[in-house]
Image (cartoon, rainbow, N blue to C red; front, side, top):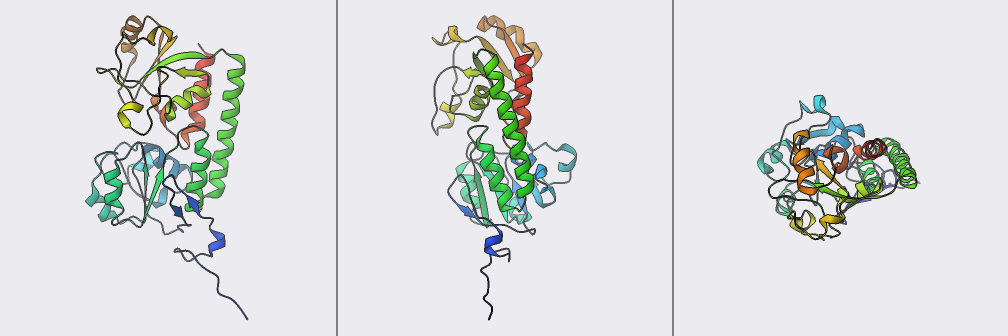
Length: 285
């Protein structure tokens, strides 16, 4: 006598596909090789390709630029905030990847009306990428690639910890916008990444879940500015360039440094690369 195994929606045995829970608390089963994925997050698009899932990506935003050559053939569906819903409907994805910070809630709610699976992400620290790798690797059957990325990240985290044991910490101002001047709160992924290599961001505020407070504007007479030891100019979202450095050194009366915003703010497979890049940057100062 035989018994029939329970199967997931992809037709695979339920015990062969570990279910994963996303940042919204939704449990996802293994999708199977027929999955069609639209990614609305640049760093997640890159992660999908690094997981070996590029052939399943059927749509991406105009800000999804890595890996550059491979993405030329993938249709665009607008930006992270101005998503073209009808274009996504035409592509008929089984899964759409979103992020709590980068995509609008109303967009996600509209997508849920016709997309079978919305996968919500919200990494807040470099360590959170370990769960992110497991989530996407588990859903899309890329567990081995996810484990490899996790090992690379753990090694980068160890390198950052070793660096902090040899160099004194610094208090920094991380600039993301100009006129109005804007920085980051400490409960952001960027701040956690900088802290991992010994750069503590000022002001010492947390923004909670409100977007404006997580990326506060400030004036150059703010009372916390005298405690800043170094100013970091990010290349995104505002495209700070080397020619901005003299202006910032004059305004802050502190040394200023241009940093690659992708290396600091992109989670996913770039997290390990970013930590190693930041470690090398600090060693070279």
